[in-house]
View 1 (cartoon, helix red, strand yellow):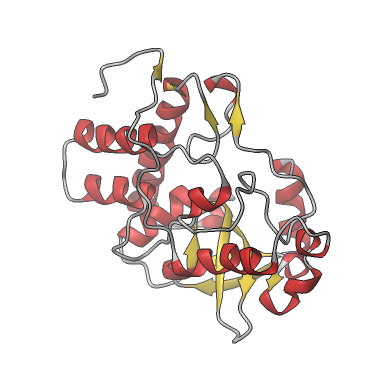
View 2: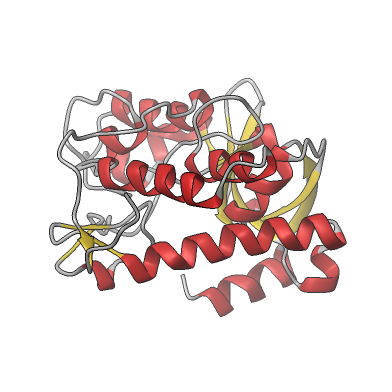
Length: 247
């Protein structure tokens, strides 16, 4: 969705709820606010511990070079019966992008999109800047989304039993900081109409049309609750474009 349109929709129709960082999850299934692996939060934790920034950056780049999922199950660390395209959500209405592009510069995000030609250093530098700027801002001013128009936007996923997680659409870098600093609650905005209910699994578009088996659809859904501990999907590291001295 266009970022400007998304921001407008959430401003007009969004509901706000205060939740724990532990209730938040990245597209790739990495949970926040816990001791489990999360590349963004691990980066912030290293800086807060006082580690040398070069060491922290090298560790993040090493993760990127080895996290190269070919299909959705691999991305989430879930064993599915088929190899579904990356980001083909069983409850969605749009086809998955596949997550792979011809050139590194075409990838909109280095954690969720990939290229056979390697990883763009420019994109990596942007991640460094976003993470470090989020840390500096929150340490200096606190988390003040009203002042800086930096609301965290999410899609709510709700289990049959009623418990929920919030799939973060915008705000992953900020939540990494808040989770690291031990913030108990944070305000998240979501659209009630886009909430995904496990109880409606038979009605999910890609289950209804047979693209997903019911069992695989549920495993994808549950994957965001269980969390992803997969730090690497390949032993063959991706090249950096252009080559650099990160490692």
